[in-house]
Image 1 (cartoon, rainbow, N blue to C red):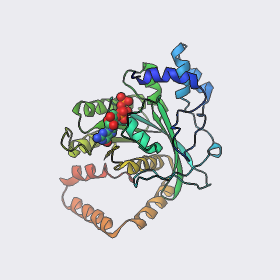
Image 2: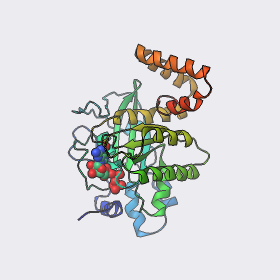
Image 3: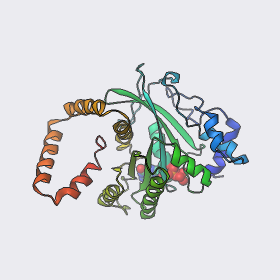
Image 4: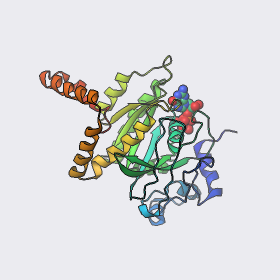
Length: 309
Ligand SMILES: Nc1nc2c(ncn2[C@@H]2O[C@H](COP(=O)(O)OP(=O)(O)OP(=O)(O)O)[C@@H](O)[C@H]2O)c(=O)[nH]1
């Protein structure tokens, strides 16, 4: 029997207190999800459903010192790298949004280090928790793969409110999911009007070249219009998944941390950049200066650069 995420969430009640985390992954820690019940119950409608959902939405921040850090050795060259570092790191809540079947759970499983990302998994709405080093600094992400279009309005509202950052996924093989991604971007803008939250638009399934319905140019044009970042990934091939999650950390830091701190990071980042990349960036700037018509193209290029605002 196939369960939708709503059914799965209800089943989670039986496992209250423990985080739905892949059992078969060594060295990625499982823990009870952090919750500040005051916040949660203040916003929850008094229905039976919310009790089940409360497990899932334990989303308030908690002290970094509560963290257990694990290191994760992956076979994949493109899996997110964890650290055993003891220095304190920030914990960021990242929410996956997108139409059915676009690959949200597959991306989440790659992130979470579950080996078989291509395998259809019937686990309950999952929350993955990983530590990673980005630009020589620790960061922890709690990734919420709980979005479903059929969710209650309350759960949708929670999803829209709880994230420090959002990943809106569409499938490059499904035009309708691309259109849905634009709608979600608009909904998010409405829900978080005054906030400048980081959003990355992700065109997943880039490996399915023959069935592509959305071009890279369409994806980046949409990102420019909606003022967000853009990347294409393949969860199946683990392609660009690490860049995506490192990118989301950078985008959060660019907004949350001081200018000085970000300038220092950027300087370190540039120092490590290859000569080829430096030359390309320099030429890009020269050409853009000479030709104002290039402005749009320049902007659309910068939507691919997840290291800048
Ligand atoms: N070829 C290919 N298939 C993928 C990729 N990502 C996901 N899939 C497949 O697409 C199907 C749907 O993937 P899911 O990860 O379940 O998608 P989802 O967005 O979580 O779907 P819902 O749970 O219904 O919201 C599965 O059969 C995956 O194996 C990808 O990058 N390439």
